[in-house]
Amino acid sequence: MTYSTLLTERTGAVLKITTNRPEVLNAQSRILLEELDDAFKTAIDDDAVKVIILAGAGKHFSAGHDLGSPQEMEDQKKTLLEPGFKGEYRRLWERFFENTMRWRDLPKPTIAEVQGYCIMGGMMIASACDIIVASEDAQFADRAVGWGGGHVQYFSMPWDLGPRKAKEYLFTGEFIGAAEAEKLGLVNRVVPREKLEAETMALAQKIATRDPFALKFAKASVNETQNAQGWREAMEGSFKNYMLTIPHRIEMGTYGAAAREKNPKDRFGVLNKKT
Image 1: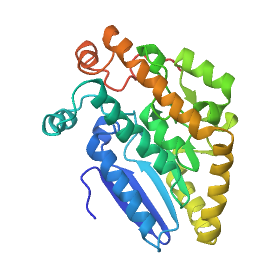
Image 2 (image 1 turned 90 degrees about the vertical axis):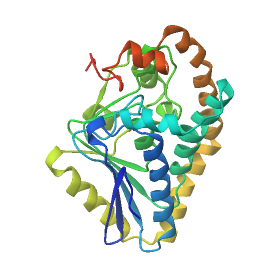
Image 3 (image 1 turned 30 degrees about the horizontal axis):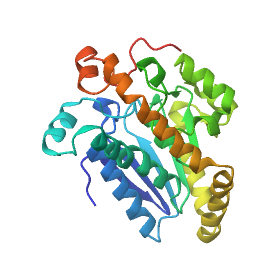
Image 4 (image 1 turned 60 degrees about the vertical axis):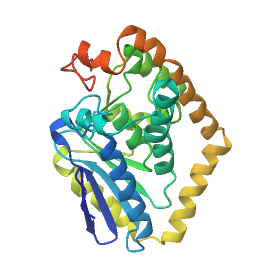
């Protein structure tokens, strides 16, 4: 299938899905997210695909949700949403939480191939993958506290980093470099930028030699172990906490249209970054 925001390529038993909006740092528009969901579903239904790689075109994996690109703003005019807080709750649940939860549980191994910025919504979808291979220049961050929010919608950071480091990086909004991310357990492997694509593909091809039925249940057991520890309930509770911060952010002018007017050149929250 041809997509407007994605590139797909199959190499043997490995399907690589690449978000293809480098001009906006692969920001996640509604169209991109819906196409990505379709691409994942297609890959799951294809018996020839055993492993899925998720990548981002250009210098950066993803700077998060699309908060105001011309394409997104035009799409918002055409896509009518239920008004008020109720409609916003439904939009954010379906587009950013429910989607990502479903991708975390895909019955095939997924590998995120990460370079450059992997922040906010970008960190969400990378964290939902089973394995993350990062280039040495990769940088991860959830900067929501600086905008009056608690965190992103799919909040797996305490599970990925541990509670104390999660608090540190949330409270400060600092970027997590690739080496630190590997040390903390967020990232599996760190490789030179020029070797990122080849190293990720080599890992995917190795995994693809394994029995797909066994891979499915190996993954399920790890995910179910987290679920037994309260992972799913914690994720749903965190999403509700996220929603509670929205009225506060509206008052601060850091949410929606007010935020775009206040910082028109910083749609992705990466200016004046702390490293």
